Length: 129
Image (cartoon, rainbow, N blue to C red; front, side, top):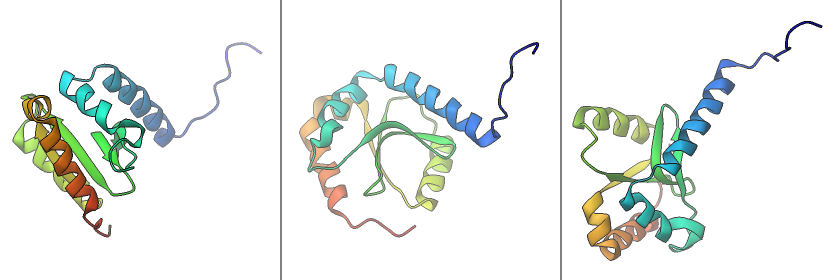
């Protein structure tokens, strides 16, 4: 047989594969603040909650997400625009997620306060989708 046979892959599967490799690249290029926070969230270190990092959710990527509690933690620098973030937040909230944002410097300079706020959010009952 001449050439290479490639099985047909659904567009949704190709998109998911693309998202996974993009998420992997995002994890490799985390900011200092994201790395600092991830060290405290990984391995169920914070009240037993399981967080994932750079998780694809629909057309977006969450910096950190606890799927069980439907809680997204975003660590923002100056690279985000308000309009894009508003649209993104609306989509995530419509999907049943709560979004909590922290500035990079807040994570780096007040990690205990950031962790306390995350714990408070984890203790809130998750909204129904």
